[in-house]
Image (cartoon, rainbow, N blue to C red; front, top):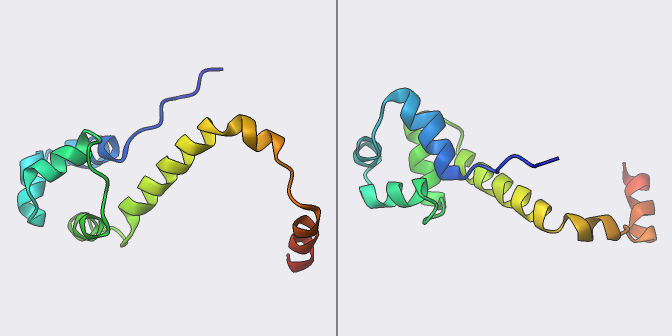
Length: 105
């Protein structure tokens, strides 16, 4: 079964926020006081979301702080999981840690 492509944080910003609100990259950049080139770089996957940019975007879109950073981290985990899936299947939890986890649960 073929896996669906993992979206980038920039694709999510463009398709789920800018397009439905009919905002251009320039509109967003002006509204949050950043260079348009920074927004363009995020959209095209050349720039990661920083904590500063997350705060600005969250304020503008009325989202909880950390929203964009959580999306970015989730995407990174999805990509990593795909790249190491074979290794993950080979690794067994250490017995002592496995026992400790059931005791603390």
